Image 1 (cartoon, rainbow, N blue to C red):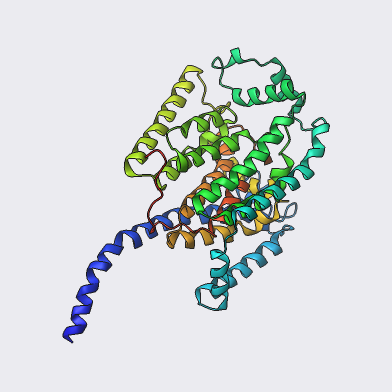
Image 2: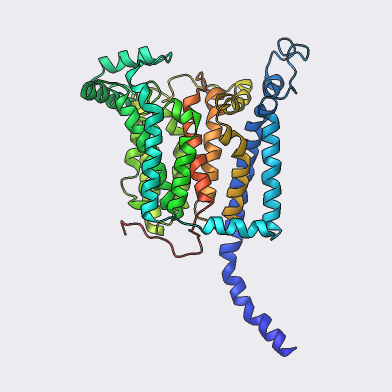
Length: 429
């Protein structure tokens, strides 16, 4: 009895030491997971019942959307595949946590890694596929509705206009360079999309510590219909997403200049204003030393002050339209993802399972699993907030950000980096 009591007493200090790692991170995982899975679930409802949210929230639902005109419970084309995929993944998850043979298989998959040579071959092969898919579009004029206005603005734009109006000047600079240096307005957008593929690899590899995770993220991004469709267009080029992801990457490599590409991303597309909370969260959850985190967060605070000053200077709210809340438009904004990404089958079908798996990865202490969950939450919320508070409409190209974060999230599931391991110090320290 005395030995048993001594053993119990000897374990108490260890249990107390583990509390900060086992309790608080779990609470944070739940705090991010609950709103994320709720928003994901609401967003996926239109994939199962396309008319349900519109029917329930439209002010004209007693007239135009009466049951004899539109059946709110008529299933969509992805309804059955979505339900079956989620049931299948749930079954695999139960088998995994029941410690069956499935757990051993998943453990071997998550611990598998590729060599540097294999990674280089994989990256080159992905680039070759990307070029083969998209290079043919370079010789053709765009047919997007906004193209004529964009090209005309680029032709009349020059550097002297920067600072006089709040416009996507950096975007115009890139398109102007493409037109004047290469004689093709699509050349730079093509290079930007290729760079986004490569940046996705390096960012995923950096936060996971695995080359395989980076390759998986590249493959998932390349298979995205949204990404490929807008990869060479000047009307909706991807510089905003490339710059924003680069700003996050700099946080993990050398944090002081990370706000610079973020500011440039705003001058490529003001939509990245909505990503400000994501940057703050990512910095707070990074492996930077405490002092570096404080300085980095303060630098982003300066960015916020600069944006507020710009809004006051140009007498603009930085979104280009008046701001007023419309409840109907807000709720109907949740239908945007399922409609705009209806051909991105992998993202739509596996978004909910990925969110759940990121939650479990976060509880296990996997680095930045909760960050990617938060990225997904904010990205999905931009659609209802944009239509609910402004006169802007939701366009498909804005969901390129969701495909990027989905791809990175899938890579994080193969991560070899845990918060219980020694932190990787910033190269600035």
